[in-house]
Image 1 (spheres, rainbow over the protein chains, first blue to last red):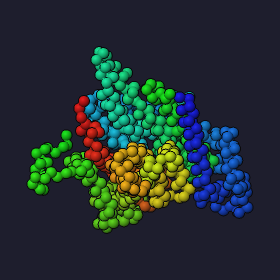
Image 2 (spheres, chains in turn purple, orange; image 1 turned 135 degrees about the vertical axis):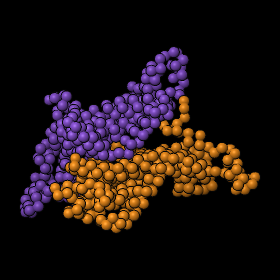
Image 3 (tube, one colour; image 1 turned 180 degrees about the horizontal axis):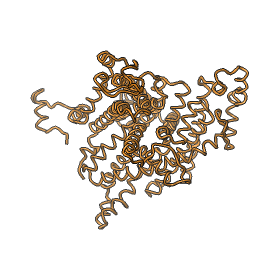
Image 4 (cartoon, chains in turn green, purple; image 1 turned 45 degrees about the horizontal axis):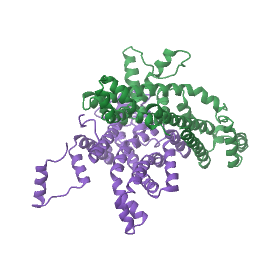
Length: 319
Length: 318
């Protein structure tokens, strides 16, 4: 088990290193000029040279890469080209927003997705099952921003016209400051991500649940006289959840992608918004920081998935 | 469930040649199942309709009398400068610059379908070739290619896509390439897995024994057996690519304005949905209808090719 995890961790670090290298290379092979962006269009060549020197952009590429990696290994992500703020602080100030959004949404879509999936598997071809299928495909077919717009239109704007201000259309209140306001402001973003994603989970749960419920040990459990809900939830769901856990790992890891759009639509000051802003200003150090954090998300999520397997299903515990 | 009644099959066969039994290959069986699936017919019809509208976009623009980029500041905007609603003049209303939404939506269909289909084709070809090479050659090649595919799949893809686009500047070509780059690995991984198992089949061995080279075994013996899963994956990739393009355009990093795209129109409508419901509604519906039709068609193709796989709508009872 330990060796297995060590191997996964090594591969994860390899991914991190490749991704950061790719982004680094990308920025230097591509035609762009951060110095001009910072100094402005009217800057003299002397000013440009000065800015380039201050950013270390006038040094040879390998040297720049070496100093970048050296600082990285010391946990120093550098300073933003744009605001000169330390990248680590920028990321730290945005992380709580994105974490609140991601974890809350994941909890919601698991609840909805697995719930609908189990209900559908217990009664195939029933109304719940058919309705669930339609919901699945509608969710799969909709871009995140479209779902967000729909929710804003109906749950914010229409209700607002009727005099109910239940759901604010955007903004963020820190959890430590006002837990109720925090949840209220995040409800629509959570629902957006959950609607787009829950579909996959209900489909996955349904398929795997149908398979598991046909297994011999389920018949054994039933013949022992266990109650139906005990059979379904304690014996069936537990092993049916394995593919769900795999998917959860993938989704949590790549969630930062969906988060960019959701944060943009709802005006949440999280990592996704920062990513979009720094990409448009070509703020390389910040982009690098975000890409590294995002890739670290993926690596950690994959490790958790591997641990999750072992917890859920004793048969997959590797020797 | 969907099998032809024996009597009917016999009658069909007899009609062709008395006394002969007409063989029906798996593709033909699948086609017949697909033809009898109302969902498949409806989604195929929707896709054809949208494709026809895309092809006929200039004709539609001509018939309506409004070009896709023509701004009607006098009749296309209210006196307050806001979009005007659906009317005889503008069937689906106008946008914030007084442009005809209907004309822009049919022109937007061109971009969506073009990006969806071209990116899918590129991704499918790349995925099939890399997957076949990895699965068939094995060893070090497989190790490197498989790891590479895993890596591409675990990239935070939208983030990297945005970075790529911002560096190279947004354009149609870069949009297609970016989407293809982040999609091929999913197909490659499935193809590799299938190739690994097919490689061990007796007919592959038979092909070796008569002296076939690696390219022939890969593309003539193995590839045809992979077409079913690849076809399903490719059909499902089209809507993903369309959504991806719409998302990039929505973020202002896809196809450059004033070229009409559904994502770009939805992005423009963000500040006007409170006064002009038609502005986000119609492009949103067009986008949803297209992606939903492709997703439903992909599901139907999957069911037609693999009738044993249970399905929610027509699944077997326990």
